[in-house]
Image (tube, rainbow, N blue to C red):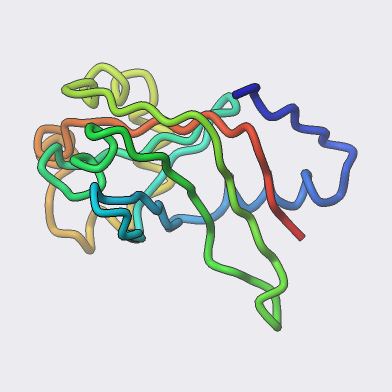
Length: 146
């Protein structure tokens, strides 16, 4: 699958990129071995054309990905009538045990984005890093947005 080429002069792409930078929660969808879809809300970090989600390694989404599931990511539809849509599809990878090293290079930016959410969650970031020790990395090949 080829990587999505973002065109910042395209209003749809520009709006989607701004939403990926701004939004705190998105949804990842995976499929279990029986073909049943599962969508769950997640925190995510958008950087360099990749979307990264930290997760516990024992979650259903991690198990699905380990078993070869494809994945799709989308934001909540915004706008007054649900007409701001961002859906990403592409190559997805589950990296086991990589959160500490990944976070080391992005800690300040991640904390700035999720400061209030981390406080509300009630677990210090170091504990989150230890518990959410797997990374889901999505490299978009397709954008569906309007």
